[in-house]
Length: 193
Image 1 (spheres, rainbow, N blue to C red):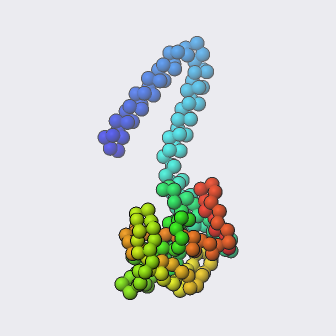
Image 2 (image 1 turned 90 degrees about the vertical axis):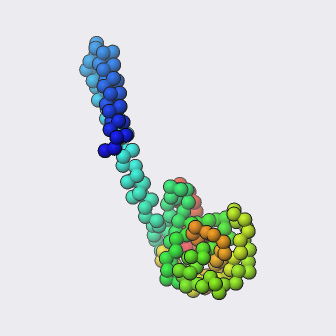
Image 3 (image 1 turned 30 degrees about the horizontal axis):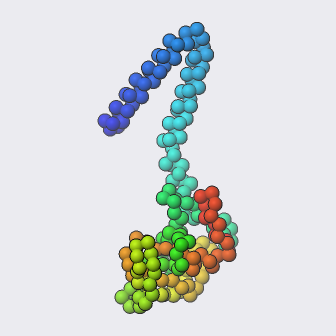
């Protein structure tokens, strides 16, 4: 326990004693009813403390699984704590993590991810441009031999490699439209084909 934790615990104990003392002195006429109410509030307090202490574990277990295969050609993705949806796709056999971006036109690979899936960024023709939140960037059109998400594998998939700085890759509408239905509701993204 750190010094701050000990100080907080002492503060809570003193506060509890003060509130408990006030309850006992104010309810001398009906001490049984006062003790009953104190026990109810004590259990409520313990429930709140337990819920707060377990919240990170519960959240990690419910959102830690990145994707859930609901059936053949149907997946569900929980929204993460940062508000985004993330998917891991196998591109040419290599796993790449994407942030789902319905505002992006294409599947856009960072230079690092392009290199990981077997594309040589030095040999790509950066002939396109894209307008991003960070300004205009050069892009190179590429074709991916295979793209697999869940139990669905697509071949000869169009994508772009971003010539600018990117923290990760974007999964835009060029790929998402291959799924027959895209639904976002209740903190969940569902793709169905």
